[in-house]
Image 1: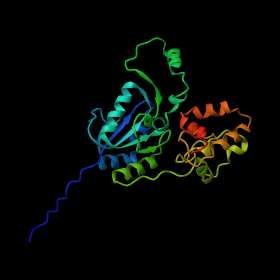
Image 2: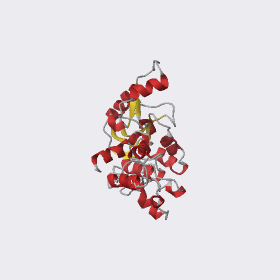
Image 3: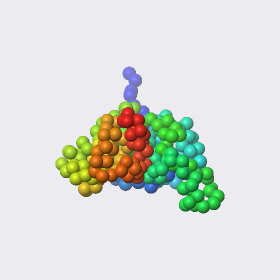
Image 4: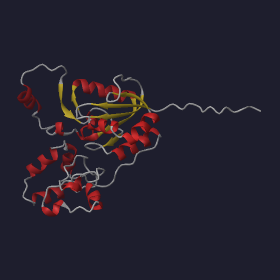
Length: 264
């Protein structure tokens, strides 16, 4: 009779890379500073590249790449293309990667060169600047994890599903749903320009919890009635231009695209 060894067969850990481009690095810091989960993460996956945690990145084939930040230079564009080629799954994390962030506030208004010259003048850049855009303007993105910053519970739930081969579920509710659960008085009743009805939930209605209007930093909610909400805000005495500028404040050009299309 063959004796069975008690030695467990080694199971290869999923290879993961975490990258940051133009942004504040807040999403990477959130992962690093989540003490209750960080050891489980590093024990469950093989982190090959994460400059916030190690200064020795290994650039090779990856099972999952998490990317923070918008693309705003030619060097970053080349890097994201290389990451996409090496990664089986690519996830955009945070508002800048998903929607462009504040640096994409005026993306597409045909004034990029004028604005660059006004701020920097006639200088030679080490790498050619590009108009800031979310990463899906350059590569295919498999999953999106919005937030400014991302939500720790959602982030680790997403990571857990991906490394176990399960398909992540999208969050179906707007910020208004969470606001109601938190028993907040609706700011729209006081004629405050809040974008909760148009914005994907997941933040726990963080801003309205403190009496501040939602600014749309989690990106558009698919079921939002965009045109009607603009009409409502206009009835508060705001001009269409003022409203669109507020939406642009966090790089909300994806919300603007929904408005242009009349919703979906």
